[in-house]
Length: 123
Ligand SMILES: [Zn+2]
Image (tube, rainbow, N blue to C red; front, side, top):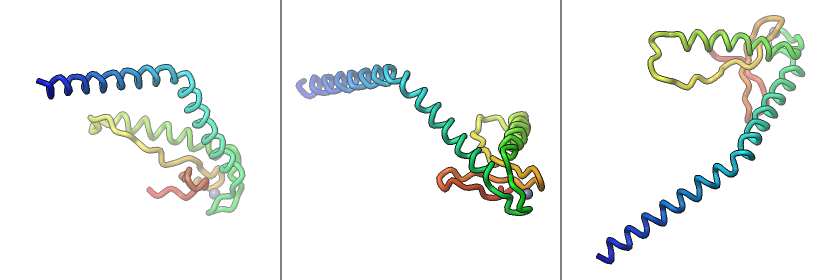
């Protein structure tokens, strides 16, 4: 009987801890959401700046600010095609593989966020 009562108290304590954590999470959401949005914006701006400043590894021409925009358009088209495939029944995570396209020769690049550099896309 004592063991049962102790188990019930422990379960109640775990439930209270969970409730406190949920309330804390909800209270911090007004900080978490803008922080995540800011970090995403900062990483995206960094990627676009690096792309605009680099030269293409194939043709040697400057990539410029147009390179990430070309990749955005290309990726949007490819993602739509992937989503419309009837063979895909399950919801799958599709990782973006192109972040810049050379406006001169069309070489596609993937951005390695951890290294802060672009590498030609492997298809
Ligand atoms: Zn090029």
